[in-house]
Image (cartoon, rainbow, N blue to C red; front, side, top):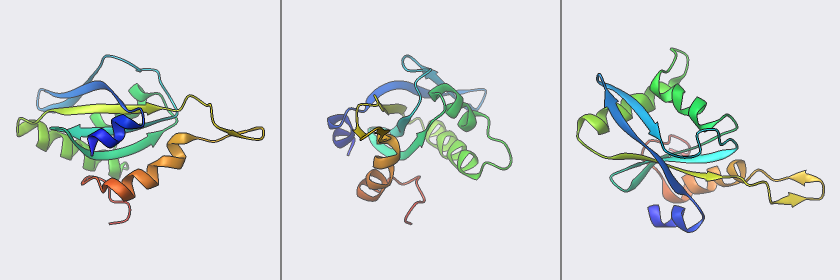
Length: 131
């Protein structure tokens, strides 16, 4: 499944690790990228696919430090903790929308257009959409 994501341009930009028992992300690229699809990959298996218009760093902070009203962030924070405590490698892959696709004067957001299809096709375990 990871190969399917790589074939369409996903690339590894970071890795989660534990810091005082909490998930923390080290990004080595694309910190300020926005309009992206991102994927949490655990031991080579895509586990969660999401999209954001925020910068990657800002969106990932929500998983590191979720507020009480952010159910998806809380759930994935717990998923990240569990995987990391089990000694698994958790990577972050992204696909950046380079804004090349247009219909007339209108930009077509690749992240928004692909997210549902990727989740439907790959059925990542941590995504609840369609389950």
